[in-house]
Picture 1 (tube, one colour):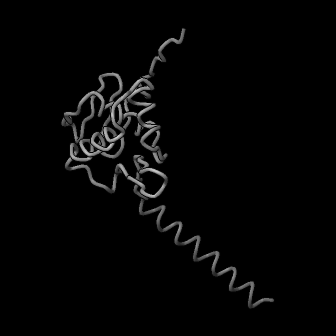
Picture 2 (cartoon, rainbow, N blue to C red):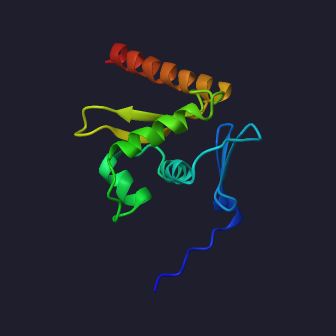
Length: 143
C-alpha cells in the first residue's frame, strides 16, 4: 500500500510570478485574489506547475490528471486549458504562460516560467561577452 506523501511547508506553496499555488488548501491566487477553477482544472494547473518547462501531450495529461480509467474525450484537456488561460486575466505573460506546441504529434502543453533577469546580471553578461570578444581580437592580432 502506498502512503500519501506529506508536503513540507516549502513544497505546499509554489509561486510563479504573482500566481500562487497552494497545494495544502488546493487554491490558486493571483495577487492575493482567489481564482475560481473547477477541481479538475486546479489539478491540471498544479500538475503543469509541478512540471514547468516540460511538454505533455493530451494522452499524458489525461493519464496523470484524469486517471487511467477516464473514458471521455481527449478534448476535455483542451477545454480545461482554455478555462485555465481565461481565469487569471491579469497574469502577465512575462511571468509565465501555458504554452501549446503544435506539430509534436498532438498539441503539447506546459507552463513556461519566465524569470526576469536583473539589471546587474544583464550588464555583467554583456561585460563578459565584450571581454571575451576583446580577448579573441587581441589574440588574432598577436598571432
